[in-house]
Image (cartoon, rainbow, N blue to C red; front, side):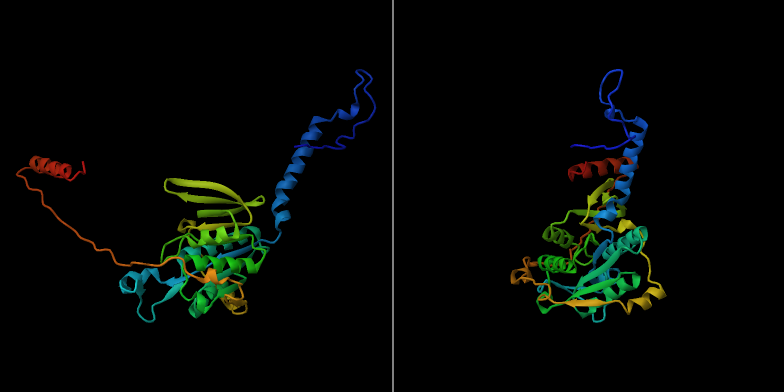
Length: 319
């Protein structure tokens, strides 16, 4: 790497009378240090703005059955390999995707109005409700992907449809989504989107903040927190450790009615026939059978019962 420094301290081109070397090489060290620090500070403070002065964030949101009430009302049809829900069961935004939207809103709190947030969902007519919720919370616009060919999408078709929507939006710097959907808990669609769009992916984020030309992300690990920095554009999945999400206020709820929701079909997204074909087939779905067995350890004294317990645990291979 070559570094050129010019006209610092305005050195003369005359030769030094004592040793004869060129005086233009003599640079005041204090001025040189100040100049380097000034240039470095300018690059750091403006690097993010030079790369992308107006940041656009796409938040992927999925509508799911209300997980708080799911276990009490759902029925598993093992022959059809599907979950049956009673009519009128409430559908909500996946809680992890709500965390992703909250992360986007916090980034806008950091950066100001220059951050534009677009919410994207794939689903039937009812899925529009989660987009309205996102708009009421502060998203600027929304995209609803709906097509008969995508009525029962798997991870493969979902990833292609969502990636195509992000691509069609254009100029997206950051894609945010939940760490997994709260219905199937697979956690693969987001990484599929990152692979299709050739974006670096950071998973299980619990904190995100804008850095110089990048994002600084805290990741949840089994035994701690890892901090990484990723250049934009990128995709980040958000975990529930991000914290509480905000609630819509009356002003934003009223404004949401005037915000646009685009309706895109598979044809609008230019999806190829192969991208609409499911690659995975569910071959089994069942509620695990739980069994419990209780064994009473006998003994005349606590010492005898303790010894008998130890022998029983040893026989079972537990100690």
